[in-house]
Length: 330
Image 1 (spheres, one colour):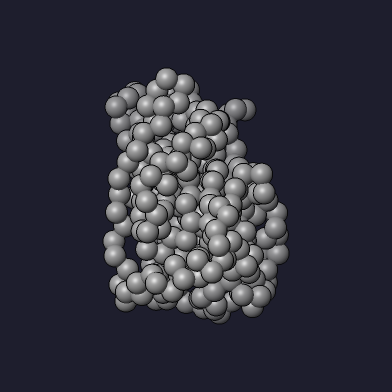
Image 2 (cartoon, rainbow, N blue to C red; image 1 turned 60 degrees about the vertical axis):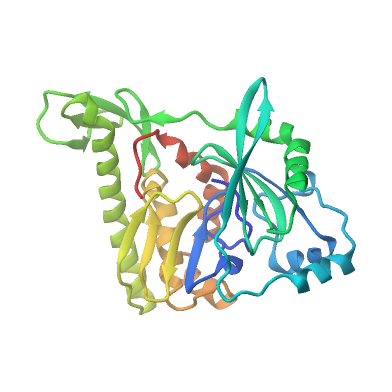
């Protein structure tokens, strides 16, 4: 996945959690790692963007800005409809020809969008352009066309998909394991104890990928439940349901009712990363925000916060390469 337009906090995205500006409901969403994004927005909103924090993955060299009269931008902002319930997003597509092949770009118009943003998402391996409702299709096409080389380079850089097949290398708790198919063995899936870390799968080949996925999801749930209970006891809070999903845009979330949601892919990362995500979401039971008090609560139970964030920043996006089509935790 890979772009988030929110305040970076310390757990997801390229090693940062975010969610301050996407709260349409009482839920803190901890967002996923940004693979790449281009964005254009009005000069009048730069001051607000500087206050809110940088766009995840945005650097001066990969974020052009559109020169717009501040007064005009301010008037546009005042004239936008302030509906109680923002209209649903509208979807459309345009096409870019890259290296002789047609690449679809999915257009999403969103009432809360303040800029044109291009995303190249690792999880779904596609291109998405988000635009405010008032931006013309001609401007959207021009923006996409001007950045076609940027899109092409990032699509080429996408890591190869690793399917759950015999012989594939898949990390479990950060350690690469080779999948070994044993069709005549009894049982389902188990970790080998030989000199090479292995993941043994019994049963017929058509069921191999699903069995590996089910095993990884069970292991993720067991580890997360244990970590959540430990951190909840340390912070003196209660949590309710724990749900595992295969979200492309966030590693975890916490609702105002105390329901926690996590990506099952955390079992692929080193244990400290999963432990940190659990601490992060549990700390939202004290503070439904990312204030200094929230971070103090996180660091009380997980002092190695920045080490885990650094790992996510470097390796988080690559976790989406595992599984291939037909495997989903949603």
